[in-house]
Length: 314
Image (cartoon, rainbow, N blue to C red; front, side, top):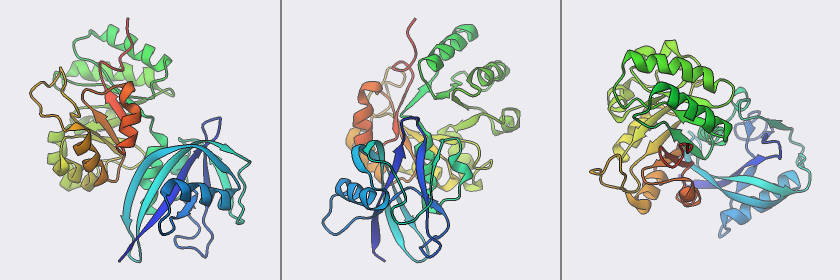
């Protein structure tokens, strides 16, 4: 079965809300919501197709767009490649030029709408930022929490409370304070044994590669309302992450790092190849920082993750 190449757009308004459209009842997956777009014509560049489709569907002119994520999905009756772009600036006032209902929704509201199955990774990518802060090792709790507070004030939206010393009671106490600090401001990702899941219902969970290998065959350990991530280093672990139904992963190390000097770096080319075979958002980790964000996007990544490069100075 031939794979149908489709472009789709995560269109952001000036207030950060995202534009979605409802599919006509007569269409494939009719009645569900979608990100506007349509088929790429033979020989047409995806960016050109995006501009054409959004002009036809919404009456807008794309002024600024970048690749966000590519998703391959196989329905029983068709195979699609969703080539998704983030549109951050456009001319004109969007309207349902083909009679389709539209809605502007916040990232938090997106999961309340019913999308086709292929759109699940796009919903995740639309809700995630481009930077993932991982807290450093070796700080006493007060210093760590002050640093997190400063990072949130500077705009950090996704924070992992790292657990380098193992999963001890001190980490749990720290996690309680971190949950309070992030409430309503940033998404906190915790690490630790899955037995702790019930104690922190508002936090997401970031699995180690070891946990991923252990638990992936059992499937997702909690419902989709909660963020689930995993640390991956190769194609095998990415396949396990897909099997488990994670929402996003970190892929590392891209370049040599001080923290793991013995780890063999993937390099940008191999990282791009691995991302190309994976359908969920990927944060590149290891020797990268905000300066590499554009390069990460060009590789197909959601963004970059890091410790030193993102931790606020002072």
